[in-house]
Image (cartoon, rainbow, N blue to C red):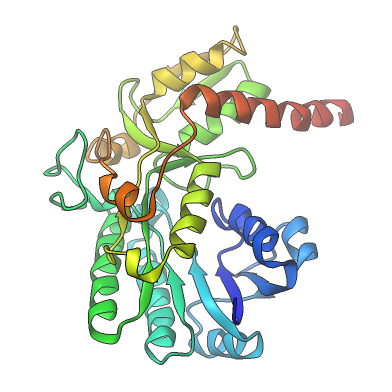
Length: 322
C-alpha cells in the first residue's frame, strides 16, 4: 500500500489489538500507533509510537505529514457509561476529533478513514429483534447521539467530497487482552477476571438483559476485511451492521461456571442496565454479508473457552509472583 497507517487510540480495547494485526499485515514500520498517553510495551516497542491529542489539529496534521500517513483509524472515544458522566467532553472528544480527520480526508491529505460506530445508535423505538441496517435510530445516550451524528457526517462527506470512509456498528466487544474501559457491556469482560480472582461477581445489568456481542478476534477481522474490500463493493457509507452472538448476563455466567464451579453472581442493576435495555437484542447484518462477505466465526461457547484458556497462564503467573 502507498503511504502509512495511523491508529489513533492505540491503548484502547480495539486499538491495542488492531495495531498488532495491522503490523502483521503491513509491516511494523508502516503502522504508527498513537494515544494521549503511553501505550503498552508491545505496541511501543514493535513499531512507531507517538503521543497525540487528537483534538489538537496542528499536532495531528504534523504527524500525518511527517509519517506520510494515507489511512487513519480513529478509535479514540469516551464510551457509553463514561460519556454520561461527562456530557460536554464526551461530545467534544467523540465528535470534534472526527471533524479533524474528515477535513484531512476532504483536503486529500489522507485517502481512507475507518471510524467506528456502535449499536448505541439504536434506541427504544428500534426493533428489538433482528434490528436492520435502516431501522429507526433514536439513541438515548451521549455516546449514541455522537455516533449517529458521525454516521450522518460519514454520508455527507462521502456524497459531497467522495471521501472513502468505512465504518462498522460494533456490538459489545469481549476480549482478554484489555480490561474494561467504561462501556455498558464491560461486565462481559470483567466477569472473566473476577472468575480468576474472586468467587463472586457483582453485575450491573439485570440477569436477563440481552445484548448483541462479539469476540474481539471477529471484530478485528471484520475491520480489516471492510478496509481491504474493493471501493465499489462498499454500498453503505454511514456504518455497517455486523452481528456476532447475543446473550444476557446469566448466559455467560452459566458458561463460565462450567470452568469455575464455585463462582457466584449477584445482580445490582444500575443506570447501565437502563441504557442496555434501549439497545437491540439481536442484529441483522445482511448487508455486510452481501457487500463484503462478512461472516462471524465465534459463538458464546467458543469465546468463553478461548478467553479462559488465554487468561489462565496470566493469572497463574500472577499467583506465583505473590
